[in-house]
Amino acid sequence: MRRTLGTILAPVLLCSVLAGCGGDADVLSDGAASDPAPTETPTSTQTDGDAEEPVDYVVVGLPSETAAGGSVSPMLTPVRTPDELDTFVSQFRLDSFADEVRDDATSATDEGDLWAAVVSIGCDVPPGVIVEEGEAGYLVTPEKVAAPLQECLAPVTTVALVAIS
Image 1 (cartoon, rainbow, N blue to C red):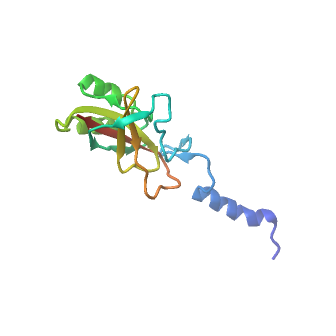
Image 2 (cartoon, one colour):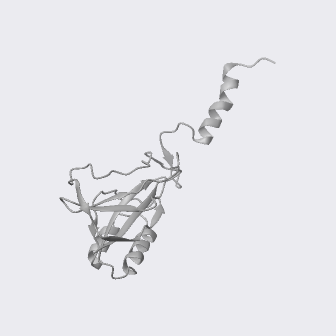
Image 3 (cartoon, rainbow, N blue to C red):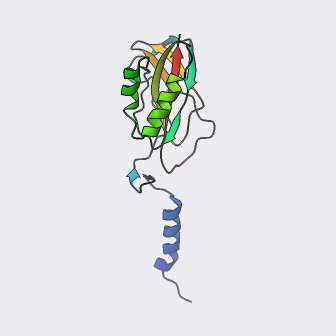
């Protein structure tokens, strides 16, 4: 039986495409392509100022949702009032995730002033966050994931809700 190079490579290429090997984009559930999501988020190296000292804080929640959107920020935003909370959750494309963040925020005990930030958009959910006071406000950094995933079908948005006393 005589085989050509095309008949040998076709199954290999098909397998690579189906397995997602070497792809530069993820496919979302609606079939649209997205840019690859970073597995780590920016830290305090941006122009927001370097961390100065530790802060007394409690992590109230780390709600996460697949393909919820949002923008990662190294700075915490105050969400003490309903208007501040509504402004913060308006960045999410899924109303169900915005409602989850609202519920977590409103059920927080009186541990201090409530702050929030999108700390990660990627394949993994960080196990926690570290909060420090910087020149321009409170800096939040996600903790490293012990065994990060190499690929995912859609990025997961993680929000840190933090009470600062």
